[in-house]
Length: 388
Ligand SMILES: *Cc1c(COP(=O)(O)O)cnc(C)c1O
Image: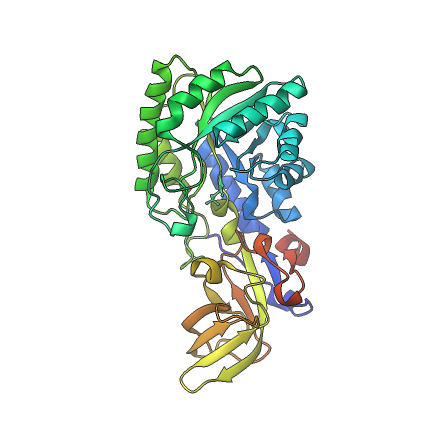
């Protein structure tokens, strides 16, 4: 069974807090993705926004994944990491002109377009360069992902995508524009989705929409169903590899691809979450009147998910095997929301113990901030600390 390993002896010389990436977990994850997708000619674009650590990106590039970018900075980072432009897709509701130009200059595979005015601007900027940009329409399929409302993106109340009611109008427009080529449709319904019904519902909606396009005589060469596959935050040791088999099977079984259509995915969290941990040191154990606080040297400046989304991360004391006790595990930031977990049972903890906040490879390091003038965390990999 694959699970993250912690070379605690190697950690002792490193200044905390820091991110630790177990690249063996990442490589196994990527192998599983490739095993599940190769037979179907499915294409996976890694969602860069989850993590752009150079060693992590290098490993992902080596596995042959493309990139899904949501900013010009991410397009630059993907290309710099050696991911070919022909595998780069670019989404986002607010692409600035320089970002569109960057994509055009590098001939990226596809712009995922989220509105009529954006479509017109891409057409104009492409015309100025004498180019034709590949575009896919990001459609808001009104499918509820049943996940936290902050990470639901595919319902009508959301700012993302083009509403289905407006689709006819948009398709008519795009066909009149000379410098954009409509190659596909794109969806992304949310994140941390573990119930396959949401993806099944998406397939049904895509099939209906495909009929609409066929009726209009529009041929699409690619369907992009976005990302969103969730991971198991409760049991990272038992379920280090996400449910790729069930996930890809859902699309294989329920999405009707036309001949010559390719299916694209944009997985972020599922690729990188389980390989990463935030390693922190216990500064103090403070006995309150009713509670014990384990005060860490890491806070929401290093890992904001608990404060931002009430997200759960498993917490392990790597240096104690004392009987479990109950703690509020908190950071040093001057905000009450700087709490990783309340009433959390972990091995008896003392000053100097090393703590791992698990499943922190996605939306962890990349969301770090310098609030309270803290230093950004460094990151280390299993390859550099232990050799492969
Ligand atoms: C964030 C995002 C993804 C990745 O989402 P995960 O839940 O991390 O898989 C994919 N596509 C788009 C357009 C996104 O914004």
